[in-house]
Amino acid sequence: MGAALCLLSAACFGAMAIFGKLAYDAGVPTGELLLVRFTLAAVLLGVALLVRPGLRRASPAPGRPAMTGRRVLAVAIGLGAVGYAAQAGLFFSALELMDASLLALILYTYPVLVTVGAVLLGRDRLSPRRGAALVAASGGTLLVLLGAGGVGFHPLGALLAFAAALTYTIYILVADTVVHQLAPVVLSALVLTGAAGTLAVRALLTGGVDLDFGWQGWFWLACIAVVSTVVAMLTFFAGLRRTGPSTAAILSTVEPVVTAVLATLVLGENLTVVQLVGGALVLSSVVVLQRQSVPARRPPRDPARDDVAEPTAVAP
Image (cartoon, rainbow, N blue to C red; front, side):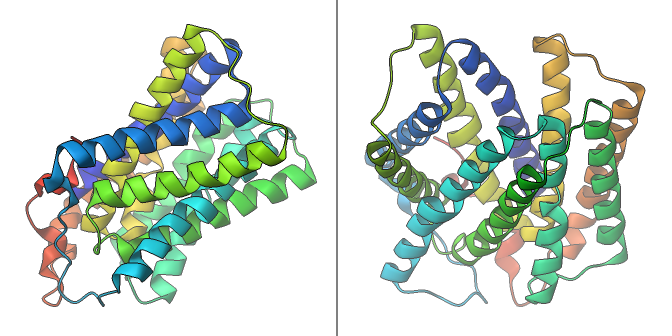
């Protein structure tokens, strides 16, 4: 179940690039896209929590250190206000300076960084099978992105892209400390509220918000907010709870493969042989992780990692 949730999250996040490109074609500016995305998603989750109070319930995992309510709240909002907002800002700043394919390549160093960080922090162990899956996923992602061709390099852009990868790494590792303390819907709502708050302040300091675009722009923004934010985040946090940070990060490397496939189907871009080989490598790493997930995630001290899916772990 955990692997499936992570894969669904990756597919939803992978669709965001397509929705974003269509939103840009409809005249939506980047700043407004991010602000509306996070605000609308936060409102949707807030309404869901009001309508279905049961979604607020969480079952902390045994063996995990408990946090005070104020600390959990501060960490959750900080994940959005600092982590998610900063990662999005760094990503789009880099995108202005360099090719998207190389940007994505640098960004997707984060599964390696998450795995290394989780091992150093003692949260995960780097088994031979997991190491092989990491190499296959990283190599496959490299082939998928390099197969697009036209790669350009910009030193500052590359630095910003790596900073985005590092920020997302820290985001995942910090999220792993609170994902067992809060229900996924509550955690997602707090993260999105924090990100929306930061972007709202930024908009006010930089001249306000321009929402003068047509219904097509709003439609694609709704797709980004619902599919690529609400559903993507809920399934990611629910999957992270069951798999751990390194496995969740490796499974997330399916995202650029989904983006490449959707770009071919929706935007008419062509997949090369190199990209197809890379996609096969990424999918093979998913199979490897799926086959090892049951025996690897049943330590006696933390049995809740492999429990049956709870009602609070899925989107309403």
